Each structure stands twice: as C-alpha cells, then as structure tokens.
Length: 617
Image (tube, rainbow, N blue to C red; front, top):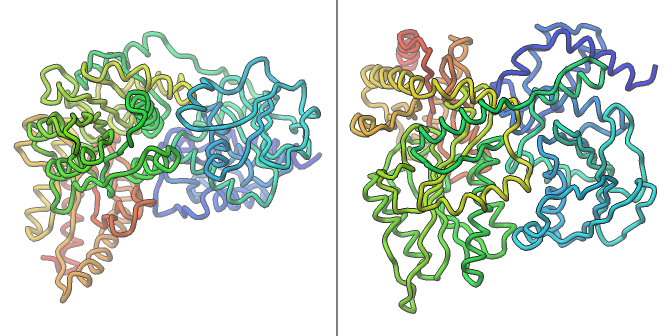
C-alpha cells in the first residue's frame, strides 16, 4: 500500500465515526483554538490518532478546533486538504479548498496585481474558467493572459510572472505535473475547487490566498467537503439539489423581514454578499463618476471582517480609500456621519457608507430620523456644485427583522442596501449563507451586485438555501424570545452590580422594533489611572468568560456567535472578531449573546457567584 492508499483507508474509518459537530457547527470555541496554528494543530493531533489506530467519535470530538469560523476553514476542510495533499505529494499548507470555482484564480490575480506581477492562465476545459472578464479587467484592474491548452504538457515557461493551470480532473488521482506551473486549480463540477501552490517557499502567497478565503469568499463547506471525502473512498453520496419552493420561501422571508420589494440575492456567507455589494457600488461609482475618488465610510472598530475587507478593496482599487466613521465610545453615529460626508463633499468624492444598526459591539441605535436627514442632505462641493449623494450599506445582522427597506421607512429616500449574515438568526447557526436586498431607491443597483456575486461564484449552495428555507420562517418569533431572555439577563446584571457599564438598546428603541439579543459589559474596577483601570477590566472580563464557560460547558460557549438556537455565547471582541483591527480601535468589553432557549436564572445565579468571588458586590 502507498501513503495515499493508507490515508484513504484511515478516512473510511474516520467517516464512520464522524462527530456531528464537524458537519453542523458554524462557529467553534475560541478557548480551544489557536489561530496562528489553525489547521496545523488539528491535523497534527489527528495524525497521532490515526497512527495509534484509535479513531473514535469521542477522541475526534476532543481534537483542538481547526478554525473559529467555518468560513475560514474547519475540521472537514482541513481533513480534505490533508488527504488531497497526500495524494498529490505536497505539504498540506500548500493546498487550500474553496467553495467558489473562480475565487482561487482571483486570489492569485489580486496578489499579482498588488505586486505588479504578470499572470499567465492556462486551462484545458471547453470554456474559460473565469466569469465576466470585462469586469475583472476594468473594475478590479486584473491583467492576465488566458490560453486554452489540450493538457498541461503544452504549458511553456514564463520568467516574468506566475503560471496558473486550471483543470477539472478526478480528485482521487495525482494531478499531472509540469515544472513551469506555479499553481494548479482543480475544479469539482458541483462542489467547489482546490488550489495547489507548488513551490514550497511560497509562504507569502499561501497566506495571501488564505486571506482571500477568509475575507472575500469561504472554504469549501463542511457538507461539500464530506461529499468529496465520500467520493474519494468510493462511498455513494448524492449531491444536494435546490428545492424550487425552498428558494421562493427564502426570497419571501427576506422581503418580509426587510420590507424590500426587490428580488434578494443570497450568497455563501455574510462577507461574500458584502464583497459583492461593495464591488457593485465601486463599479457604479466608477461608471457614473469616473474622475472622482471613492470614499468608503465605515467604523474603525466594526466587525473585523467588514473592516478588513473594505480596506482590502481600497488597497486594490486605486480610486478608493477609507474614511473612519466613529460610532462608539461616546461618539454619535449621526454626528460622525455628518462630519464624514462633509469631508467627502469637500473633495468632491463619491461616498459609500457602511454601518451596522445596532452598532457592534456596543449595541447602540441612532436616531433614525436624524440619520435619514443626514444621509439625504444635499451638500455642496467647493466649486458650488452638488455633491454626490451617498449609498448606504446597512448591516442588519443584529436586527434582521426591522423593515428598513420598506416604502414607509425613514430611509425610503436614501439609496439603501441591507445585508445580513445567515449564520445568525436566519439559520440559527445552521449555515453561514448571507443575503442582501434593496429599497426602491437603490433597486437599480441590484443587477451590478448580482454581477459581482456571479463572477466571484459566491452564490449560496443548495444545502444553504434548503437550510434557510427550513429556518427563516420561524426567525421573527426566535428574535422576540431571545430578546426577552437578553433583556431579563441585562436587568439581573444591573441589579447585581449597578456600577457595571452595560451597552444595550433602550426600552424605547426596542418598542420601535430593534430587539437584539446581544449586549456588551464592562465590569466595575478601581484603579489609580485610566490605563490601569483598562488593564484590570481586561483581566476581569477574561476571567468572567472563563468562569461562565467552565461552570456551564453546555450552556455557555466562548464563541463568536449570535442568534443561535440554544445557549449563551461569550466573547471579547478585541480577541475574536476584531483580530485585524488596529489596537487603538479594539474593544475589550465582554460581549454576551443569549438565545431563545437559555436558562437565564442559571446564568444569573452563576454571575452572582463570580461577583462575590471578585468582591464586586
């Protein structure tokens, strides 16, 4: 038996003992996850189990988590990457799976564009592996030479750039090699793709490709990775198809919850849909105002993916740059937005505003009338002309059932695109699909967004759409129940330690429909200086999370999660979602999310014990 045959035999045994969480969880525990090692630590421990011939469900379940969010990768993607690396005799770090068939190519094109490096793409299929080449060249600025070949033997050497070979071959056979090829992308006809980076000294490129997967698309999904693994070992496993009624149900639910009359778009993740929106708006700005700069206005402390992705777009698009929008820590979103929009008008720029309502992580809702007036105000450029009106991208993940896109909404005159992560309330944590919709004023922008979603091949897959069709109809009632539990827990925390700083929506805002089930908390500490106080708070906040998850391992998780079906979720934004945020903009508060199925009395009792233990009461 050769190495790959031995590996496949081990995989057969593993698939019979597969922990269900590997397939079903969309977010994993931060306390057993080391980001710098990601899949390495997981695979090292897995290989030890295989070598010892002790593959059972309990041992597999206890392995260190591969990644925190499955968008970045997960146990099954790591497993599949290892198996395919064994088959192709490369290091598993050099092999990366994608849900998208085009994004591995676009990842190389992005890297080469930023490094002024030529790209030569060869493919052996009947059609180009790229979608919408005109947009790739004019909007993204990607330059490349695309050539069809019969096989990889025909690919010549290029000394002035990198060579990509795109093929569609069986995953269970080693891919043909040619020393002139730098990267091979093998496309699965239904389930995604895999990229092999051939040179072992390409750590910078591996990191760049992984970062694209982290921010602009997703890893091959757990269900699809499992499907490929079954194919590799010869098991029968039918590929999921979209139920037509399911797609209609999802569209109707999105329209009902957002108030939109437009046809919504559903993507593979929240960041996938956000990327399509942002690039669609960039194209709109460049087409309508080719000589003007594009100003992406967003909070510097917002969710790390949103922040990082926007800055990555600005890095790529020469006309675009970032304007900070201060929304938390005493800053008022509306006042900050007025300042930002005035500054954009001063340079005659094109404003794209991106904000979360409520804000994250401090859960504040602005005065919606004042927000609408600020976004609608007609400003003047220095030469007396009319400034370009903004487009508003609003992340509604915290409150996805507030009808901001309805014709009666205060935002009805503002070009508004609403989007949300489906991993939260829409699916209750069962899938990570994201979606967007437009109000009537912005309806003409949806075809542009759809075009960028398509060229990225980032549409939601059949499993995701079918899951959303099952879960979205119950979303409104789950939101209400989770809000009630959260409000009750907030009241109890306030009663136990009145000096604690709690960030949560007011009762007045809740009556207007904003009913998030997440709040942020700073525990009270005494210190001689603000810096010392902050350090003490950091330490105490961390101890609180450790205490709660150890006290209630089934009911409290150290996860980046929200809108789940059961339990409560505890994180510190600075060490979770704000991983790529500048240090001075990070938040070290405790962020707690409470589900519809949570024992609030139990949480309250343990929280009180913690407060006594640390002399807070």
